[in-house]
Length: 467
Image (cartoon, rainbow, N blue to C red; front, side, top):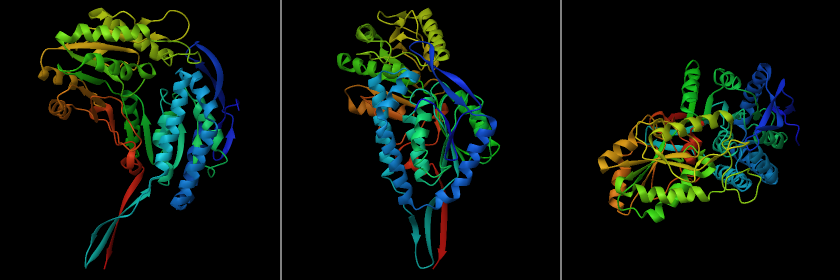
């Protein structure tokens, strides 16, 4: 199944043109993806709208059964989906297998949820119930770092709640989503799931269309601003999971031998291309040398290369534009800090960058201020706890943060003062499908995952009955 096609109204069809899909490990195209025309985008939205009334009236149990068959189709194609993920995204094949497995885990979680009617008042005069009803067609826009997993944040709750979906993958990683579309074409009723691909022109057409009832987007804060402005004209509901510049705050009583390997893992997983990855590390000044030495040793031992190769831990940065961003921030950090041994860009073909730590970077350096979304992090010194909290809270992002220390009272006190949607204590990145996530400040609007994430795809309807 290498003839990738769009899914529109239950039918697979070619695009109006095609675009190369580049393997970031080689910088060479390895496949072609269809590009949806303006007419095809319009027909995908129309198909979702036409299918909506029947789908929302479909009994909840039947919608759940359909979602379960979708899950089974993904599970049956695990190996091929993982192969495509490695080729188009760059992550090691073992990590790609893990993404498919986690996608299944999250989808199965949503398939086990329900949306009960809530009685909020019942007396001699009235009975008041809260019902949750479907919204309509949902535009689900997913990024290139986890193409399948982040689809699983959106599509299952949308479908379960009675909505239809137009799924749009990122232009640089469209193949796994298109493969998914082919797998489910004969499982869901026509128009319930539509998959379209193309360049940067596709998103604005989706987000500005008045037939779209909700937009669920994961990606950069800059694009989130554009989507929010586009949605405003139609008062379209939005869920935005946006950028993060997540700090890790190391307290003076931390055991660095234990803590720093965990910092390394949570900073550089998926080559740093994780929304909630550790992006900056604050360390007491007297502990800087030891913290840096531990991280540097781990960077030097890292196995970086083509994700199809054996024993590879870290693949390339996913695309040329992102690689140039990481390189720019690396150079900015290096101009004011010390690049520790073991890191740096890799010469030759592919967008490879070794896990890299730059120590002694001032807090106003671009490497600290901006979200790098790649395998380069700054190690920033602080002198007292109040300063550390202020530094961690600086900037416009507020996706996540972590605090590391042995005094549970102190770590909880500091966690309470950090401006982030999620704060972990003595861990980072711990995520389960039943745990809701939400960004603070410019890191997002709305909630994903958990029961709250399911309810994001519904409209509250209050039924107030006289007795």
